[in-house]
Amino acid sequence: MKLYNIPMAKSPPEYVGFGMLTPVEIMVLEKLPKHNTGAIVTEVNEFVFDDAAIVACLLRQWDVSAGMIGTAVGDDLRGRALAKRLKDWGVQGKVRFTKEYKTPLEVNVSDRKGARTYFWQRTPQILSTLDTADLSLLRGSKILYTDWYDGDHVLRAMDEANRLKVPVFVNLEHGHRDPDVLKQFAKRAMFCQAVTDAAQLGGKRALIGTARKLLKSGIKTAIITLAKGGCLVAQGNEIVRVFAPQVKAVDACGAGATFSAGFIHGYLKGWNLEQSARFATAAATLKVTRAGLQMFPVGQIMEFADRLRVEHWAFRNNRFEIIERILDIPRRVAVQGKRAQRKLLRELRIPEKNESRRVENPQVRVKRKTI
Image (cartoon, rainbow, N blue to C red; front, side, top):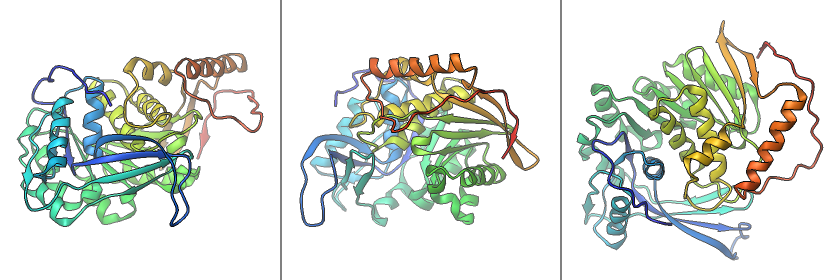
């Protein structure tokens, strides 16, 4: 991966990530082997994980100032290489070294079906170093990112951000299933990104139930990612449902963090909810079409985002209503939009997933539908 030889961004950084720091090896292969056998690896990429660090590095690729407050790494070659990589990429913040343990390593294996299998080293000893991390990088920043799976260790940073009136973005993933976890994080966060397996598999009830639960918990902006299905983003009475186009997945590792980075990029640029959701969905969709975490340029992502199908919903009387369909317009224009999308995929050299059946474009009219 190339180094981002961008002049050091202004300090304090707009984005600050708080969480685990670990180098990662991302391996791509055609198919996971059977037990006690092997497989040919087609591509290997190196990066810096976990998600808070991924988002920081991705934002730097889009020329957004970013910093990272992370766990201590081992005082060894692997830890020194990680610190140098963050510095070369313009990610602000001091990397701390310790002789108490070796730098952890994560290994991710992605197959051609878009699935990933990962192996990581996460111990209470490593995570406890977050409790003594210097939080001064938060002063003057515009958003803090944390992950729920770092547990109580992130609460101190979230509380400090609240004190400084810095908005907090928490990646809650499946954590919303635990009422105590949801309550603990919801009261400290403005943005919450969540996922539910049923929603990813197309279950509309799970999607709606999760969105309603997050809004009722006090979250100002609820974000539900749906893997290849796109996303739903709710803020007050405004709900945006963005659908992701079908593409051939090569490497899904880091797709969720790419979505987070895309949404945060839109927020920092002052975009509205739909623009941010479009950009995030487009960035994550494009990311899975090639191995590693080398991002597409902002211009290409925005061009792709403009062609995504969008629905606007409303949250009224404790239920959602679809009040407008965008790009779901007269058949002739809809067909033109589909052709334009395919043309863009070809221009970006992104293989389009083959459809096994013909899809008819129904006659469309503006609808109001209660769900």
